[in-house]
Length: 252
Image (cartoon, rainbow, N blue to C red; front, side):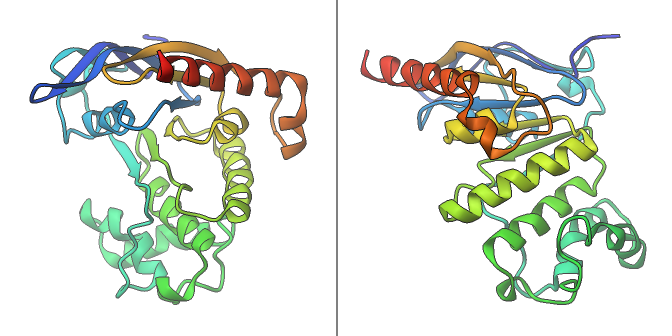
């Protein structure tokens, strides 16, 4: 059996004359949390769109469990930058939306989602509307909607980027706890280097477009992690090296 769930091999992508991805190769293994960081416009979100079928690579291969993605039955659960909750649906019906789209009845979907409201910190808010929830609670509802679909892999596109600094930190801690409990296979896109170090098993750093992988970092911090771990010498060294890589190549 292939050791990697997801593998990108020399993937390139253009939009007209604009080369966005030059030569990107990366892997994600079962139960691994991998993050991609890079400058704006480097094609980070384009990678996620290729995985969900919205875009196609110009060249290179994308494999899942050793099979080309177009021949694979792989399913990806995608969480965008904004929570994208429907304001006219109550939270319980927002979280069941993906299941209903897959053909599950509303009553079956509600029965599947209901036990998750407590661990996701949403117990008692099932029948509230999105406007009645804080930003962090809305993001938890969005993640619940994403993971309840039992997809093979989570794709997280800057999920906390719109939150204030304190709420973002709280959500990072919460996601780290949830991942430790469930061990989802996850690929995160973020501009936040500290977030990447805190959450990830491995980090890929992309160059400016046309993007290529500048460096790959393994994060040696033990799990479960706390914010205090970000003050360790190992965490500070990785963060510094990532920032130096980004800064050096943005100026070159």
